[in-house]
Image (cartoon, rainbow over all chains, first blue to last red):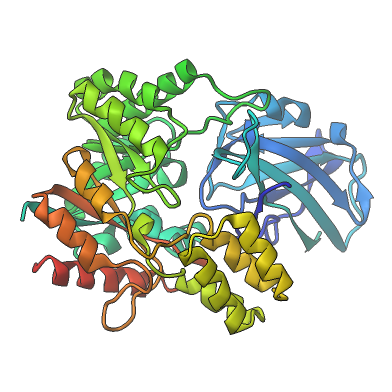
Length: 144
Length: 323
């Protein structure tokens, strides 16, 4: 049985953070900020699951980037990032590639974000590399 | 009775810090205002340049400790064995990361560093010469449900004793001597609809040492709901409790204790912790002529009572230590 923890100190999706992303003056997509809802920060390699639904539709992984410390990572890079530390009070920016952007108005963002808790072996487990999970998911409707 | 000092782990202010109600500076200032001689912080939580210390961050800490008259005593390191997505770190890799943490603690001017039990006893032994050279004592935390006498802690004891080093040892968390169920968990279970008699039954099963699976079955047969089972999980886990706390075990390891975490969840107006027998534990610590810190470590963050409870804790500590 998976051992799951949730520590709802802050909302995963940050208030008032949705805006369009412009490249060369053209609307190439949108971006918003997220927080790690936990009591401590984690290395990005501990992200086990990252998925996004916007207005009920799954966003393809290749259209999402995770931005931290002035760097912009593809989701497939996350498992290898063992020295990129995401602080617990530091918002990360999520960018979504969507030429033309979103329609004006409200949009519902559902984030699935689950992490391996790297110091907490699953209670009672004798298996190697078996850790409790932090569920830091969250959703919010943001206006554009 | 030794020289027991009272400090505050800034971890007490987790909720306030993460919600942006208190900055790092506010946490340090508040600890000083509550009468702490020193403070501790958890690196993965509050060190701005984690896992390293930049010169700028070091300068900021120096300015804050001198402005508020408090010392930065101890650094809480995490032992993230599951850092990689594909496999566990090896002992060699964990040792190297622990040495990195030592450099950080040393640069910050800390004399104490906490490691967690995933750093194996033999890795702790290998860390001893580094700890001596960096001038930082490293202690493995004894956290509920471990106690000083549990098998894994006995393995650490063997390594620590054999090393002959004063630079590796133990950091017992007062929570491992709890004698009653965790009050916030108990109250929360009641609020979520747990019948009182079933909560009492769960506590009784724990007191009697009934094995977990059997206890679970008996509770379910008696009609326990989710709220009861949630509390039950804690009673057999990180907030377990005993009829007889392991104070004898504590007495035996006292020569190797370098630091304490004063865990607390709820103090009433008479300054009594609801489940942890502070006077009895402090007596053992004092009898051993302990020279070092008890760091207040509040843990019921979502209650919003951290400031009130931590201030009460410091009053309790001063009363018990006659300060």
